[in-house]
Amino acid sequence: MPRGKTGKHNREGAPLPVAPILQKFLKTYEKHCAQTQTSVCPAIRKDLKTSINSEQVLRKFVLVRPDDSQPSTLPISLEPLLMTIRDECYTLGQQICIWGLELSNPEIARLASLLELKGHATCPLTTLELIDCKMDLWSLGRLGQALQFSSLHSLVLDYCRFESEEMESIFSGLENNHRLQGLSLRYCGLGPRSGPLLGSVIRQSAICELHLDGNYLQCSGALALLRPIAEYAEMRGRGPPATASPHSTSPPPALPARQRGSSTLNQMTKSSGTVKATSGKKRRKNGIKRKIKGLTEAGPWLVKLYLADNGIDGKGKDGENSLLEFTQILTCLIKYSAHLRELDLGNNVLGEMAAVDILEALRARKTGKLPVLKVTVTPQISSDTFGSIWKSSNKSNVTRKRKKKVTAHA
Image 1 (cartoon, rainbow, N blue to C red):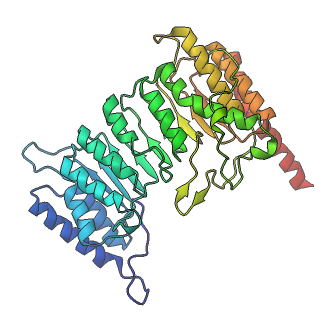
Image 2 (tube, helix red, strand yellow):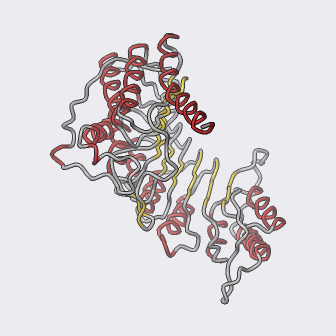
Protein backbone atom coordinates (compact mmCIF):
# COMPACT_ATOMS: atom_id res chain seq x y z
CA MET A 1 0.00 0.00 0.00
CA PRO A 2 1.26 3.53 -0.74
CA ARG A 3 2.55 5.00 2.51
CA GLY A 4 4.63 7.95 3.60
CA LYS A 5 6.38 8.92 6.82
CA THR A 6 4.80 12.34 7.35
CA GLY A 7 1.62 12.50 9.41
CA LYS A 8 -0.53 15.43 10.47
CA HIS A 9 1.07 18.59 11.83
CA ASN A 10 0.60 20.33 15.16
CA ARG A 11 0.10 24.07 15.55
CA GLU A 12 3.86 24.67 15.42
CA GLY A 13 4.06 22.79 12.10
CA ALA A 14 5.96 19.77 13.44
CA PRO A 15 4.67 16.38 12.20
CA LEU A 16 2.67 14.37 14.71
CA PRO A 17 3.48 10.67 15.32
CA VAL A 18 1.63 8.50 12.81
CA ALA A 19 1.00 5.44 14.98
CA PRO A 20 -1.38 7.09 17.52
CA ILE A 21 -3.39 8.66 14.69
CA LEU A 22 -3.88 5.29 12.98
CA GLN A 23 -4.59 3.50 16.28
CA LYS A 24 -7.40 5.95 16.98
CA PHE A 25 -8.61 5.56 13.39
CA LEU A 26 -8.81 1.77 13.78
CA LYS A 27 -10.65 2.06 17.09
CA THR A 28 -13.21 4.47 15.60
CA TYR A 29 -13.64 2.26 12.53
CA GLU A 30 -14.36 -0.80 14.69
CA LYS A 31 -16.86 1.26 16.72
CA HIS A 32 -18.74 2.37 13.58
CA CYS A 33 -18.83 -1.23 12.29
CA ALA A 34 -20.41 -2.34 15.57
CA GLN A 35 -22.95 0.51 15.48
CA THR A 36 -23.98 -0.25 11.88
CA GLN A 37 -23.98 -4.02 12.49
CA THR A 38 -21.43 -4.69 9.76
CA SER A 39 -18.17 -6.63 9.73
CA VAL A 40 -14.75 -5.07 10.08
CA CYS A 41 -12.98 -5.49 6.73
CA PRO A 42 -9.94 -7.77 7.34
CA ALA A 43 -7.94 -5.96 4.64
CA ILE A 44 -8.56 -2.54 6.25
CA ARG A 45 -7.59 -3.84 9.70
CA LYS A 46 -4.47 -5.55 8.37
CA ASP A 47 -3.27 -2.47 6.45
CA LEU A 48 -3.89 -0.21 9.45
CA LYS A 49 -1.95 -2.50 11.80
CA THR A 50 0.90 -2.82 9.29
CA SER A 51 1.10 0.96 9.00
CA ILE A 52 0.98 1.34 12.79
CA ASN A 53 3.83 -1.12 13.30
CA SER A 54 5.97 0.48 10.60
CA GLU A 55 4.90 4.02 11.57
CA GLN A 56 3.99 4.77 7.97
CA VAL A 57 1.04 6.81 6.71
CA LEU A 58 -1.75 4.76 5.09
CA ARG A 59 -2.84 6.38 1.85
CA LYS A 60 -4.80 3.61 0.15
CA PHE A 61 -7.86 1.90 1.67
CA VAL A 62 -8.78 -1.47 0.17
CA LEU A 63 -12.27 -2.70 1.03
CA VAL A 64 -12.81 -6.30 -0.09
CA ARG A 65 -15.00 -9.21 0.94
CA PRO A 66 -12.89 -12.14 2.20
CA ASP A 67 -13.08 -15.32 0.13
CA ASP A 68 -13.90 -17.47 3.16
CA SER A 69 -16.84 -15.37 4.42
CA GLN A 70 -19.85 -17.38 5.56
CA PRO A 71 -23.49 -16.53 4.68
CA SER A 72 -24.19 -15.90 8.38
CA THR A 73 -21.34 -13.37 8.62
CA LEU A 74 -22.31 -9.71 8.90
CA PRO A 75 -21.81 -7.86 5.59
CA ILE A 76 -18.88 -5.56 4.93
CA SER A 77 -19.97 -1.99 4.29
CA LEU A 78 -18.32 1.15 2.94
CA GLU A 79 -20.20 3.45 5.32
CA PRO A 80 -18.17 2.77 8.52
CA LEU A 81 -14.94 3.59 6.67
CA LEU A 82 -16.30 6.86 5.27
CA MET A 83 -17.75 7.80 8.68
CA THR A 84 -14.35 7.18 10.26
CA ILE A 85 -12.54 9.30 7.69
CA ARG A 86 -15.00 12.11 8.47
CA ASP A 87 -14.92 11.77 12.28
CA GLU A 88 -11.15 11.48 12.50
CA CYS A 89 -10.57 14.24 9.92
CA TYR A 90 -8.14 11.89 8.20
CA THR A 91 -6.58 14.02 5.46
CA LEU A 92 -3.82 11.63 4.40
CA GLY A 93 -5.83 9.12 2.38
CA GLN A 94 -5.66 9.42 -1.41
CA GLN A 95 -7.12 6.19 -2.78
CA ILE A 96 -10.17 4.04 -2.07
CA CYS A 97 -10.40 0.63 -3.72
CA ILE A 98 -13.56 -1.48 -3.35
CA TRP A 99 -13.68 -5.06 -4.63
CA GLY A 100 -16.72 -7.29 -5.19
CA LEU A 101 -19.29 -5.50 -3.03
CA GLU A 102 -22.94 -4.69 -3.66
CA LEU A 103 -23.07 -1.00 -2.82
CA SER A 104 -26.34 0.38 -1.43
CA ASN A 105 -27.82 3.80 -2.15
CA PRO A 106 -26.81 5.20 1.29
CA GLU A 107 -23.21 4.03 0.76
CA ILE A 108 -22.98 5.69 -2.65
CA ALA A 109 -24.67 8.84 -1.33
CA ARG A 110 -22.07 9.15 1.43
CA LEU A 111 -19.22 8.47 -1.03
CA ALA A 112 -20.63 11.05 -3.46
CA SER A 113 -20.82 13.65 -0.69
CA LEU A 114 -17.16 13.04 0.12
CA LEU A 115 -16.15 13.39 -3.54
CA GLU A 116 -18.13 16.60 -4.00
CA LEU A 117 -16.26 18.42 -1.24
CA LYS A 118 -13.37 18.94 -3.68
CA GLY A 119 -10.64 21.08 -2.10
CA HIS A 120 -12.58 21.23 1.19
CA ALA A 121 -12.73 17.43 1.52
CA THR A 122 -11.54 15.78 4.72
CA CYS A 123 -9.89 13.15 2.53
CA PRO A 124 -8.99 14.64 -0.89
CA LEU A 125 -9.23 11.47 -2.97
CA THR A 126 -7.33 11.27 -6.24
CA THR A 127 -8.12 7.62 -7.13
CA LEU A 128 -11.37 5.67 -6.86
CA GLU A 129 -11.58 1.99 -7.82
CA LEU A 130 -14.94 0.19 -7.85
CA ILE A 131 -14.07 -3.25 -9.21
CA ASP A 132 -16.73 -5.93 -9.78
CA CYS A 133 -19.22 -3.91 -7.72
CA LYS A 134 -23.00 -3.90 -8.13
CA MET A 135 -24.84 -0.56 -8.19
CA ASP A 136 -28.36 0.30 -9.26
CA LEU A 137 -29.33 3.08 -11.66
CA TRP A 138 -29.88 5.63 -8.89
CA SER A 139 -26.43 4.97 -7.41
CA LEU A 140 -24.74 5.31 -10.80
CA GLY A 141 -26.57 8.57 -11.45
CA ARG A 142 -25.58 9.93 -8.04
CA LEU A 143 -21.97 8.91 -8.59
CA GLY A 144 -22.03 10.54 -12.03
CA GLN A 145 -23.20 13.83 -10.49
CA ALA A 146 -20.39 13.72 -7.92
CA LEU A 147 -17.71 13.15 -10.56
CA GLN A 148 -18.31 16.62 -11.96
CA PHE A 149 -17.15 18.19 -8.68
CA SER A 150 -14.53 15.70 -7.51
CA SER A 151 -10.73 15.98 -7.45
CA LEU A 152 -10.28 12.47 -8.87
CA HIS A 153 -7.43 11.90 -11.31
CA SER A 154 -8.20 8.22 -11.88
CA LEU A 155 -11.47 6.25 -11.97
CA VAL A 156 -11.54 2.45 -12.30
CA LEU A 157 -14.87 0.64 -12.87
CA ASP A 158 -13.55 -2.70 -14.15
CA TYR A 159 -15.95 -5.67 -14.20
CA CYS A 160 -18.97 -3.50 -13.36
CA ARG A 161 -21.61 -4.47 -15.91
CA PHE A 162 -23.39 -1.51 -17.51
CA GLU A 163 -26.49 -1.17 -19.66
CA SER A 164 -26.95 1.80 -22.00
CA GLU A 165 -28.93 3.90 -19.51
CA GLU A 166 -26.42 3.16 -16.76
CA MET A 167 -23.55 4.19 -19.02
CA GLU A 168 -25.22 7.54 -19.68
CA SER A 169 -25.59 8.10 -15.91
CA ILE A 170 -21.87 7.63 -15.30
CA PHE A 171 -20.77 9.54 -18.40
CA SER A 172 -22.85 12.56 -17.42
CA GLY A 173 -20.16 13.37 -14.87
CA LEU A 174 -17.24 12.78 -17.21
CA GLU A 175 -18.04 15.26 -19.97
CA ASN A 176 -16.31 18.60 -19.42
CA ASN A 177 -14.33 17.04 -16.57
CA HIS A 178 -10.91 18.73 -16.60
CA ARG A 179 -9.43 16.81 -13.66
CA LEU A 180 -9.93 13.14 -14.44
CA GLN A 181 -7.05 11.84 -16.56
CA GLY A 182 -7.39 8.05 -16.35
CA LEU A 183 -10.55 5.98 -16.96
CA SER A 184 -10.73 2.18 -16.87
CA LEU A 185 -13.82 0.25 -18.02
CA ARG A 186 -12.40 -3.24 -18.56
CA TYR A 187 -14.88 -6.09 -19.00
CA CYS A 188 -17.94 -3.91 -18.42
CA GLY A 189 -20.09 -5.40 -21.20
CA LEU A 190 -19.85 -2.31 -23.40
CA GLY A 191 -21.23 -2.81 -26.91
CA PRO A 192 -21.14 -0.83 -30.18
CA ARG A 193 -23.63 1.75 -28.86
CA SER A 194 -21.12 2.78 -26.19
CA GLY A 195 -18.70 4.01 -28.87
CA PRO A 196 -20.38 7.38 -29.54
CA LEU A 197 -20.73 8.01 -25.78
CA LEU A 198 -17.04 7.29 -25.25
CA GLY A 199 -16.09 9.50 -28.20
CA SER A 200 -18.13 12.36 -26.78
CA VAL A 201 -16.51 11.98 -23.35
CA ILE A 202 -12.97 11.99 -24.78
CA ARG A 203 -13.78 14.98 -26.96
CA GLN A 204 -14.98 17.09 -24.01
CA SER A 205 -12.84 15.87 -21.10
CA ALA A 206 -9.20 15.77 -20.01
CA ILE A 207 -9.01 11.96 -20.04
CA CYS A 208 -5.74 10.90 -21.67
CA GLU A 209 -5.54 7.23 -20.63
CA LEU A 210 -8.44 4.92 -21.52
CA HIS A 211 -8.67 1.19 -20.73
CA LEU A 212 -11.46 -0.68 -22.56
CA ASP A 213 -10.09 -4.23 -22.73
CA GLY A 214 -12.53 -7.14 -22.77
CA ASN A 215 -15.63 -5.36 -24.06
CA TYR A 216 -17.46 -5.83 -27.39
CA LEU A 217 -17.27 -2.48 -29.13
CA GLN A 218 -16.70 -4.17 -32.51
CA CYS A 219 -15.69 -2.09 -35.52
CA SER A 220 -18.59 0.36 -35.33
CA GLY A 221 -18.13 1.18 -31.65
CA ALA A 222 -14.35 1.51 -31.93
CA LEU A 223 -14.81 3.65 -35.06
CA ALA A 224 -17.13 6.06 -33.24
CA LEU A 225 -14.58 6.34 -30.44
CA LEU A 226 -11.54 6.90 -32.68
CA ARG A 227 -13.04 9.19 -35.32
CA PRO A 228 -12.91 12.52 -33.39
CA ILE A 229 -9.40 11.69 -32.10
CA ALA A 230 -8.10 10.78 -35.56
CA GLU A 231 -9.66 13.81 -37.25
CA TYR A 232 -8.16 16.10 -34.64
CA ALA A 233 -4.75 14.45 -35.05
CA GLU A 234 -4.87 14.77 -38.83
CA MET A 235 -5.89 18.43 -38.67
CA ARG A 236 -2.91 19.18 -36.45
CA GLY A 237 -0.57 16.91 -38.39
CA ARG A 238 -1.38 18.59 -41.71
CA GLY A 239 -1.08 22.07 -40.21
CA PRO A 240 2.09 24.20 -39.93
CA PRO A 241 4.88 22.36 -38.04
CA ALA A 242 5.00 25.05 -35.37
CA THR A 243 1.46 24.18 -34.21
CA ALA A 244 2.11 20.48 -33.57
CA SER A 245 4.74 20.21 -30.87
CA PRO A 246 3.89 17.10 -28.83
CA HIS A 247 6.19 18.07 -25.95
CA SER A 248 5.17 21.70 -25.68
CA THR A 249 4.02 22.84 -22.26
CA SER A 250 1.13 24.64 -23.92
CA PRO A 251 -2.07 22.71 -24.64
CA PRO A 252 -3.06 22.03 -28.25
CA PRO A 253 -5.33 24.77 -29.59
CA ALA A 254 -8.97 23.89 -30.09
CA LEU A 255 -10.13 23.38 -33.66
CA PRO A 256 -12.69 25.75 -35.14
CA ALA A 257 -16.14 24.17 -35.14
CA ARG A 258 -16.36 24.33 -38.93
CA GLN A 259 -13.18 22.22 -39.26
CA ARG A 260 -14.30 19.38 -37.01
CA GLY A 261 -15.27 16.28 -38.97
CA SER A 262 -13.97 17.66 -42.29
CA SER A 263 -10.79 15.56 -42.38
CA THR A 264 -9.89 13.58 -45.49
CA LEU A 265 -9.09 10.23 -43.92
CA ASN A 266 -7.35 7.87 -46.32
CA GLN A 267 -5.58 4.45 -46.23
CA MET A 268 -7.28 1.13 -46.44
CA THR A 269 -7.14 -2.48 -45.38
CA LYS A 270 -7.19 -4.71 -42.29
CA SER A 271 -4.89 -5.68 -39.31
CA SER A 272 -3.57 -7.39 -36.24
CA GLY A 273 -0.98 -9.40 -34.44
CA THR A 274 0.84 -9.79 -30.30
CA VAL A 275 3.78 -7.70 -31.46
CA LYS A 276 4.78 -4.43 -29.86
CA ALA A 277 5.78 -1.87 -32.45
CA THR A 278 7.49 1.42 -31.75
CA SER A 279 8.35 4.18 -34.15
CA GLY A 280 9.51 7.77 -33.97
CA LYS A 281 11.26 9.89 -31.37
CA LYS A 282 11.93 8.80 -27.82
CA ARG A 283 9.40 9.82 -25.21
CA ARG A 284 10.37 12.59 -22.85
CA LYS A 285 9.77 12.37 -19.13
CA ASN A 286 7.67 15.49 -18.87
CA GLY A 287 3.91 15.20 -19.05
CA ILE A 288 1.84 15.86 -22.14
CA LYS A 289 -1.34 17.56 -21.05
CA ARG A 290 -0.89 20.96 -19.50
CA LYS A 291 -1.89 21.17 -15.83
CA ILE A 292 -3.06 24.40 -14.24
CA LYS A 293 -4.00 24.24 -10.55
CA GLY A 294 -5.17 20.63 -10.79
CA LEU A 295 -6.96 21.16 -14.09
CA THR A 296 -5.89 19.54 -17.35
CA GLU A 297 -6.65 20.87 -20.82
CA ALA A 298 -9.50 19.00 -22.50
CA GLY A 299 -9.42 17.83 -26.10
CA PRO A 300 -10.14 14.91 -28.45
CA TRP A 301 -6.80 13.13 -28.00
CA LEU A 302 -5.32 10.30 -25.94
CA VAL A 303 -1.88 9.23 -24.74
CA LYS A 304 -2.74 5.59 -23.98
CA LEU A 305 -5.59 3.57 -25.48
CA TYR A 306 -6.28 -0.09 -24.70
CA LEU A 307 -8.77 -1.87 -26.97
CA ALA A 308 -7.67 -5.50 -26.61
CA ASP A 309 -10.29 -8.23 -27.01
CA ASN A 310 -13.15 -6.08 -28.33
CA GLY A 311 -14.37 -8.14 -31.28
CA ILE A 312 -12.84 -5.72 -33.78
CA ASP A 313 -12.83 -7.81 -36.97
CA GLY A 314 -14.79 -8.28 -40.17
CA LYS A 315 -17.40 -10.58 -38.62
CA GLY A 316 -19.83 -7.97 -37.33
CA LYS A 317 -23.10 -6.78 -38.83
CA ASP A 318 -21.38 -4.55 -41.39
CA GLY A 319 -18.68 -7.10 -42.20
CA GLU A 320 -15.58 -6.12 -44.19
CA ASN A 321 -16.80 -2.60 -45.00
CA SER A 322 -16.89 -1.69 -41.33
CA LEU A 323 -13.43 -3.16 -40.80
CA LEU A 324 -12.08 -1.20 -43.77
CA GLU A 325 -13.44 2.08 -42.43
CA PHE A 326 -12.05 1.32 -38.96
CA THR A 327 -8.61 0.61 -40.45
CA GLN A 328 -8.64 3.92 -42.33
CA ILE A 329 -9.35 5.82 -39.13
CA LEU A 330 -6.80 3.77 -37.17
CA THR A 331 -3.94 4.35 -39.61
CA CYS A 332 -4.74 8.06 -39.71
CA LEU A 333 -4.45 8.16 -35.93
CA ILE A 334 -1.12 6.31 -35.99
CA LYS A 335 0.34 8.57 -38.68
CA TYR A 336 -0.68 11.92 -37.26
CA SER A 337 -1.21 11.74 -33.48
CA ALA A 338 1.71 13.43 -31.73
CA HIS A 339 0.15 12.63 -28.36
CA LEU A 340 -0.50 8.89 -28.66
CA ARG A 341 2.21 6.77 -27.01
CA GLU A 342 0.57 3.38 -26.49
CA LEU A 343 -2.09 1.49 -28.48
CA ASP A 344 -3.21 -2.05 -27.58
CA LEU A 345 -5.22 -3.91 -30.24
CA GLY A 346 -4.35 -7.43 -29.05
CA ASN A 347 -6.86 -10.26 -29.44
CA ASN A 348 -8.68 -8.52 -32.31
CA VAL A 349 -8.42 -10.48 -35.57
CA LEU A 350 -7.97 -7.59 -37.99
CA GLY A 351 -6.24 -9.56 -40.75
CA GLU A 352 -3.21 -9.30 -43.06
CA MET A 353 -4.29 -6.23 -45.04
CA ALA A 354 -4.79 -4.16 -41.88
CA ALA A 355 -1.42 -5.32 -40.55
CA VAL A 356 0.22 -4.02 -43.73
CA ASP A 357 -1.59 -0.70 -43.27
CA ILE A 358 -0.44 -0.47 -39.67
CA LEU A 359 3.13 -1.11 -40.83
CA GLU A 360 2.93 1.65 -43.44
CA ALA A 361 1.38 4.04 -40.92
CA LEU A 362 4.21 3.35 -38.44
CA ARG A 363 6.75 4.07 -41.21
CA ALA A 364 4.97 7.31 -42.05
CA ARG A 365 4.97 8.22 -38.37
CA LYS A 366 8.71 7.64 -38.22
CA THR A 367 9.25 9.76 -41.34
CA GLY A 368 7.21 12.52 -39.70
CA LYS A 369 9.50 12.31 -36.65
CA LEU A 370 6.64 11.81 -34.21
CA PRO A 371 7.23 10.41 -30.70
CA VAL A 372 7.57 6.68 -29.97
CA LEU A 373 4.34 4.70 -30.33
CA LYS A 374 4.06 1.22 -28.85
CA VAL A 375 1.47 -0.84 -30.76
CA THR A 376 0.30 -4.28 -29.65
CA VAL A 377 -1.38 -6.50 -32.27
CA THR A 378 -2.30 -10.18 -32.44
CA PRO A 379 0.20 -12.34 -34.39
CA GLN A 380 -2.41 -13.90 -36.69
CA ILE A 381 -0.69 -12.40 -39.72
CA SER A 382 2.06 -13.51 -42.06
CA SER A 383 5.52 -13.91 -40.59
CA ASP A 384 6.90 -11.45 -43.18
CA THR A 385 4.51 -8.69 -42.13
CA PHE A 386 5.01 -9.49 -38.48
CA GLY A 387 8.78 -9.35 -38.92
CA SER A 388 8.61 -6.10 -40.88
CA ILE A 389 6.59 -4.44 -38.15
CA TRP A 390 9.12 -5.61 -35.59
CA LYS A 391 12.10 -4.43 -37.65
CA SER A 392 10.47 -1.11 -38.43
CA SER A 393 9.86 -0.48 -34.75
CA ASN A 394 13.36 -1.41 -33.54
CA LYS A 395 15.75 -0.26 -36.29
CA SER A 396 15.90 3.38 -35.22
CA ASN A 397 16.55 2.46 -31.59
CA VAL A 398 19.47 0.18 -32.51
CA THR A 399 21.04 2.87 -34.71
CA ARG A 400 20.67 5.45 -31.97
CA LYS A 401 22.38 3.23 -29.41
CA ARG A 402 25.31 2.53 -31.73
CA LYS A 403 25.83 6.22 -32.42
CA LYS A 404 25.82 7.01 -28.71
CA LYS A 405 28.39 4.29 -28.09
CA VAL A 406 30.75 5.68 -30.74
CA THR A 407 30.38 9.19 -29.36
CA ALA A 408 31.16 7.93 -25.86
CA HIS A 409 34.44 6.30 -27.02
CA ALA A 410 35.39 9.43 -28.92
